[in-house]
Length: 284
Ligand code: PDD
Image (cartoon, rainbow, N blue to C red; front, side, top):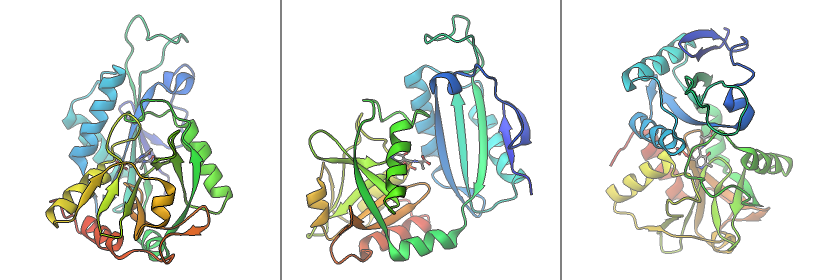
């Protein structure tokens, strides 16, 4: 079945020519995006993603030309037209198309809105969680506003490619202080010998993952100890467990870093339990 995309109010085949040459997303990466995991037709953490979208748009001063209700209809209708129950839904919003000039268009233009959907079957994800993933490390060469979910992803692209070429699934980004900030498309976590969950505090240097926020709520509800603080690769290597979180991976155990095993090199039990809580839709 042909995949269908939403583009500025129209539902089109995914390969239809639909974006203008002078779209500022194409010319300048001048836009933001969001990603929802859909399970059985339900958008997980719908409100959280919507809230982060608005924050990202606000930081870039892009006005979404659509009400929440209209956007919601477009998201659900695009999903419906692709006939998928387990899916990933991507939303891209750019400042729109205008004669090329770095500064914002003098006369405001209508932002470009694109929604795409792709299958996210459960079995491959579950299989990956069974074995766990390897990560490599890469220098964090991104800009200083990683809290904005910008479509400008070149450092992330290069880091993920380096991971792929090394046979790893993700790259953990390392800042000038030798700390792990986050993954190229996920947040990074460890579990200490004492059983405390550790993840970097939300700030300008990471994307505050919606999955991350839900894990924090689940941890609080289950009485787990949480430490929002920086950690290094050395600490991660001697930790009891490590894992990543994102809408695409949910909770995914990390079993090696740069080819060195984390703990005994097998997925940790807390990551497994958190993954189950997350899948079960446990909120707090
Ligand atoms: N990535 N950090 C980065 C840099 C990310 O790109 C992502 C998500 C996350 C986790 O955020 P969330 O839990 O809200 O998915 C953290 C999405 C999934 C992507 O780029 O496809």
